[in-house]
Image (cartoon, rainbow, N blue to C red; front, top):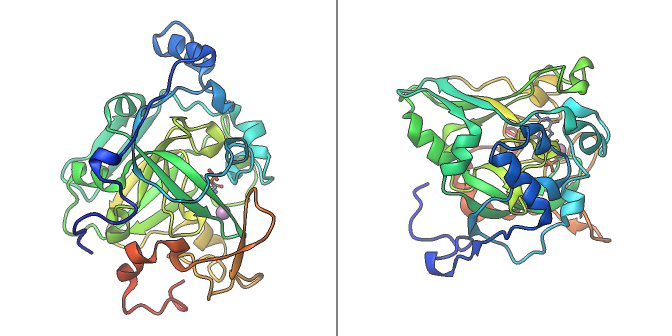
Length: 313
Ligand SMILES: Nc1nc2c(c(=O)[nH]1)N[C@H]1C(S)=C(S)[C@@H](COP(=O)(O)O)O[C@H]1N2
Ligand SMILES: [Mo]
């Protein structure tokens, strides 16, 4: 879908507020590390307060209240660190998000090997406040920091034969205690169709709440696809590959009848074991109605025109 003018969630340049993060006692530690005066392990923390601040211009907002940082960083799904909601925050200190190399290749003219720290330092970062709806029936509103996936796609110049994008998470049992258990077929893999990956809402996040990503949220770089169930938003990415055929993805592979390749948020298609009609917004008492495409239908419904969304779930 061509992106004419300005969608309503995108603020005009002059109204967009730069998110200035001022140095505090805690960020002093991070700045020492950035200056090379401390080993990078000092910033490889699960404590968001200790993470490096990022400057970003707010481009996508919502009237909804963001979920508290304490919940965003302590109630997680990241099976490489355990299956419990609090396991990632407890265990992810062993992940080393810096230095980190991202390889972008496959059917492209200009494959790239990216040093993620250097990239974060010079990329124009945006703050994008987006809803996240987990297939399990809970949701959050998260102020991500990152950039549109389309910027990376344009940089590598995909060939005409590239129809899908495959994403791969790190799989290192030394850093990730959970991958010793066969909960999923590691490495965690996800995929998008090219037009989905190019949609302006598709985000590569490097931070949240104005700082680098906590390890448990997928440091140093993760995908955010806000109109799809949360498992599509793959964490701690080491490879992005452009491919011709629909790629195998971890959840679809493990349970194809429960987790489709598309997995667009859809209140009308129940999970075989529970309803998807409502959700629990973390921090709220009553359940709310789940919206088609997680409320982003205006921006993405046209991607699926003519598709049977009961069949292609
Ligand atoms: N590599 C990897 N990525 C992952 C997961 C995972 O287990 N491993 N869990 C997914 C699921 S089910 C959800 S709901 C979101 C949760 O993101 P959050 O913990 O930052 O809220 O991450 C997704 N990305
Ligand atoms: Mo999820």
